[in-house]
Image (cartoon, rainbow, N blue to C red; front, top):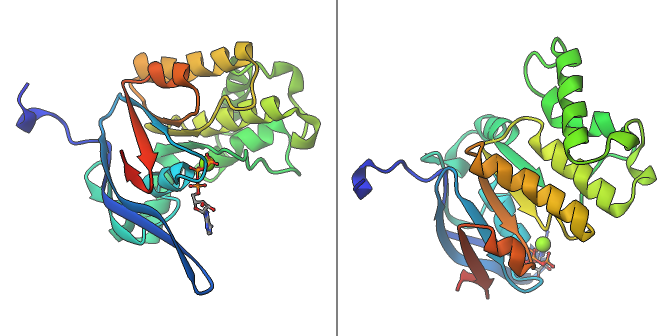
Length: 232
Ligand SMILES: Nc1ncnc2c1ncn2[C@@H]1O[C@H](COP(=O)(O)OP(=O)(O)OP(=O)(O)O)[C@@H](O)[C@H]1O
Ligand SMILES: [Mg+2]
């Protein structure tokens, strides 16, 4: 297959820059990152703490606009789209497993997992089916015994697995996972990784995973290292 007939990348950063401003101080975090991830690929992003890995995931996942450069999603210039169109992509095509789980404390496990699904049109009519899907995901991440618990009644690793189930409930094309096994023992970590890589290898989904773990990176097709705001 020559290059012209290959499909466009699912997500592509073109000289993406991000500078945070804290009062008068400018903190350049991304200093021109270019990368392309094709559909069905698993990409690991590694780098020191503070290197900008979470920032990059947010920029790639339609959560946070870069201060320079562009991000293309399925060939569309993500941050040139209307906020509504961008929110639609984020809600329907992207699943985030956040480093700090961001579970809502007032909601129980099932409700937390259903949250991204409930914002979609027609969700309330599909309530029973969605609940079954949430329960199936809870089973897959090994939390069936915790249904009905609230996040503060879950351990850190259980919260992490709940965050993973929530990221998957809308069956996203692109899964962005920020240290998804950071709080897990090796057995539940393996289980989470098998689930994620199964979605990529059998399900055709695309995965970008931030990890400090070499074995996790080794399961990916490629590893990119973020150093001083650039891909090294
Ligand atoms: N909202 C913000 N405002 C100002 N500075 C920020 C903000 N978010 C992140 N930063 C700074 O940007 C830099 C990169 O942060 P980021 O969270 O992307 O790093 P990281 O590579 O994910 O680190 P870690 O491995 O510790 O999670 C850090 O120096 C951080 O202090
Ligand atoms: Mg981070």
